[in-house]
Structures are given as C-alpha cells and as structure tokens.
Length: 92
Length: 263
Image (cartoon, rainbow over all chains, first blue to last red; front, side, top):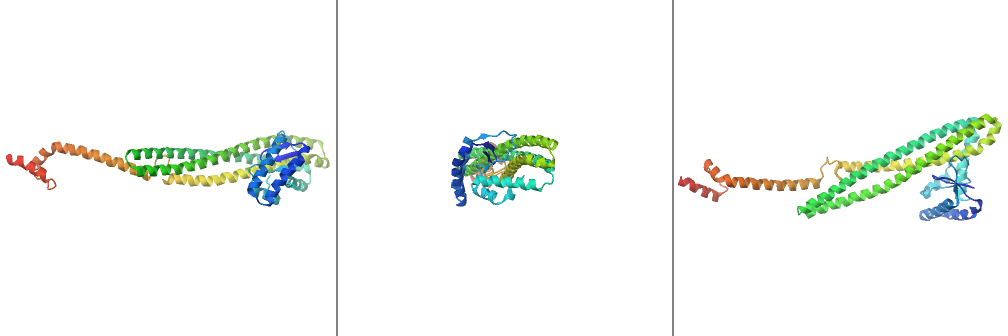
C-alpha cells in the first residue's frame, strides 16, 4: 500500500503493517477529537516514525495516488482539522 | 475511519472532481499539464522567497552580533573609567540583544529547514511533471477519448495529489516567511531607532554619548592641566605686563604687586 507523508513524499508499506498503523492512527484520531495538542503531536510523531521505518520511498517519477495520507511532522492539530473538514483547502 | 484514510480521500475527491468536469479526458491532460508547470513555477518562487528571508535574517543576526560586541566594549570602557552603573547598563542591554539573537537563530533554523523541504519538493515535482508529460503524449497518441478515460485515472490522481501536497507546502512556507518578515521589519526598526543602535554606528546611543562625554570631560581636564601649566609658567610676566590684578586671585595679586613695587 502507498502512504504519503505530506511534505516528504510517498512510501510503499507492506499490507501486513496496516493493523499496527491503524492502532497508532487511532491514537492520533482520539487526540484530535479531544483537541489534545500535546498528545496529538506525540502520537503523530510515533505514527510517522513507524511509517518511515516500515516503508520504502517511491521513485520520484512514480505517478500513483496514495492509499493513505498523513500530515507532516510539524502539522498542528488545527491544520489537520481544517484539512479534514474543508476539501477546498487543498491547492493544486 | 482512520485519519490517514480520510485524508487520502480528501485528496482523491479533488482529483475526481477535476476529472469529472472534463468532456474529453485528453484535454484534461493538457490542462492539467499547464497547471503542473504553473505549480512548478510557484514552488520555485517559494524557494526563492524563503531564501531571501533567510538572507535577511543572516544580516540581522550579524548586525545584532556587532551590537553585542560593541556593548561589551562599552561595558569594559565604562568599568575602566570607574563607572560601574554605566557598565551595568551596557551589559543589561547586551543580554537583551543576545536574547534577540537566540530568537533569530531559532527562526533561522526553521527557515533553513523549510527551504530544504521546498527544494526537495520542487525537484520531486519536476520529475513527476516530466513523467506525466511522457505518459500524456503516449495516451493521446494511442487511445481514443473513451479509452483514455480509464488510462489516465491513476496518473492523473497521482500528480493531482502531488500538486495538492506541494501547494500546501508552498502555502505554509509563505505564511512562515510573511510572519517572519513582519518580525524582521520590527527588528530593523529597533536597530535603526537607536534603541538597539545601528550596526553601522551612524546613530549614537546614550551609552556611547555618556562614554564620549566622560572621555571628553577627561580630555578637558588634561587640557585644563596643560593650560594651567602654561599659565603657571607665564603668569608672572603676563600679570606684570597687564598691570591689572585679577580680583579672583588675591594671593597672586599680592605676590605680583611686590615686584612692581620694587621696580
């Protein structure tokens, strides 16, 4: 499966890792719902580190959409909320 | 649904909307390619803007560094002249300047990281745009409109997602440089107003003025002593010739009166 980390590019991650990533993702989601900034930053860092460790960088000329998209490491909780709530925000 | 899935759908939806609008998908390819070239321009401008801001910060940091050195010098001079109060004032200001420097250093590091990220994003996008162009020409040459529809889907979604990502990165960088330019402007004003004194040394701050006053005071004392010395040597003759004793120095008058009487 293809995972994009915003600002960093796309990685190919083995399907078998999905459960693990979903668990980490759930923590991020709860932090967002509870509007807990610190918990969100910590959970996101863990999730991103795991994805980077498991994934293999796609070549630059690859033109494939991602199965999953993750915010970059310095994204704030509000930015992610905005991205999720308003599709018009994404330029390009 | 997981955050990462929802985010991917947000990007996907955008690509699908663009694709649905097109009558002939082959035209969509050309239109999209134009948009990609524009985005490439935009991200390159973004890199240049961030670099400009970074250079401005560099200049300000070197200005503040000079300021800090100068204040330390002033502190040393003041202490040597026995003016502990003035030395303390200089060092207090120096610690303020150093705080500003530390602050700028943090901003500088953040801008540098932003610049690197954008540079990589621009390189990545360039390769993808080129790859898209090749794919587009192949599709246009090989397939009818109906066939092309199914063929371009993935490439189009792929590049559209990349454009969205790069677009967000450019926006973030713009926000950051704008916020930084506002702060940089404030520091420029501070440096120019003399509150922090100008690094060029054109504006004179009050510590410099006080030190110069002290130094000119002591210069005056030296001159006074010199003049007194000269007068001390010349006085007897001077007073002799003048003949009018000054009321200020009675003793001298009396002493000078005597030789006159003897005459």
